[in-house]
Length: 272
Length: 320
Image (cartoon, rainbow over all chains, first blue to last red; front, side, top):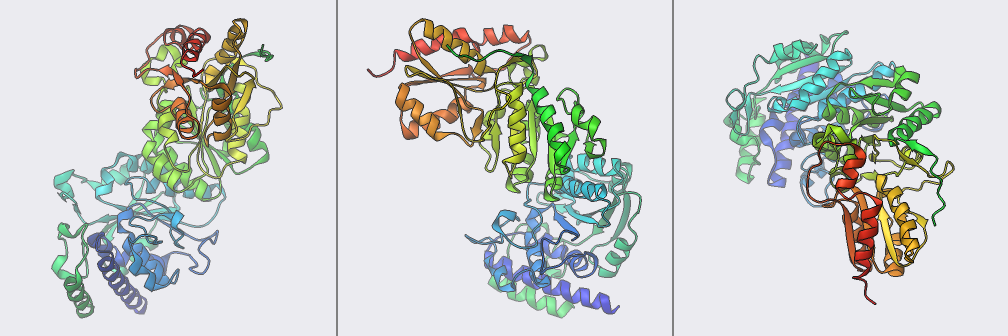
């Protein structure tokens, strides 16, 4: 319980940083970044073995963020973890920044594991890392966060097939199941259901949880399979934490202006 | 006369496969990736000797590149090969973002390059891969001229590079003539025959016909400088510019579309540093078709006769 309160507090700090950095940038993806704050809090402050003071530590567990457009939540979490100073978050998307609109390793931000943003590629990269860990008989996991809309990319299923084939139980895929994408509801744009069955049929162990509930997330990670790759269908609310914009897909790719920022920050404090 | 001895006829893919196997014997970080045509691209040599380092990924080139990137991020050097058409274009976005943007040291073997693939026809003849690969930041693009050079190019890709490398080689047996102790330097073109009347810059399967053309031209009193541009990116600005200054005209020859190909890369250098008349031998904005390799090379003018003809035509445009 104490742990949960700590993670909830961290998630609130992450959300705050996301709002501040997106306001400073003037553009970016707010909805998905807020929706994933709890997942990031649990990963970086509870689940993953990593050392912010030694980002290239060989035995670290890596997060491969396939949906590069939610970079703000990654940057906010890395800063919250101590990879770099929080002040730098305000350089998001600006010329010369290490905080590129979509993560770019070339720009030298510590903690960024993959340059990504073209959808459908992250899971394959995670498979490559996990295969080499299996090859070296290393006892560590690789996490990969995907969007639900992203699952419409065929390459995701090529990667899913290969993880199932090699029984990569050291992979944990997390699907941000918020049911919306830019054109509207996923089931209207291109239906994904029955989604859990799809992953199961590719040889994955599937768990579902409320992706905005840190205790449910902890439970899900604790129940990973030791024989197959594990997929967590994390049901989230886009924009979670700001009731006014929750589940409103028009906030997928928008940044708050100054007045909105003040209002949203006020709501964060009130809610939790 | 050029004094290269034609040792035998061998396909470039043999050199590639042998190099991967030999490199793997001394470097346990080399990993093989199979996409269903392992034997066709000679990766069976590696797979048979190092089964624990060979991973079959099925007919899924996009995933193969992303997986290879993950392996490279873990400190390995993965090698992936399939038909050049699929290696370069089916997975182009994965190569751009996963491999190039992440500077992943992966080796991509663009096998069965060019129209000489023959009877399979247009779908399987890689004639656009140079154009697509050479435009990508962080990519190294090699195009060895025979099996022996494919061996050294592959070794160089492993030893001299830190980012992604695309190596282009053919399926059909072609003259194997380069030296067994050659010093293959990425970014350095090879002058195979000296001459000052015209420079002929060739790559891949067109290098041997260019040497044959040099002999024919010699008999007609024309001295042609033959340059093997095995490294298309990075490109050898110095050797190309010197050829323009010394010879006053440059003809390029490649088994690829003229649009965006090796000749275009040469033209970019020539236009910037020392403009001289140029002409280009290659596919003229068309798909290939079925036929025997030699029939197709002749039909599309990818032979020594056409090199001689175009060279003489081009020389008429030289400023006196």
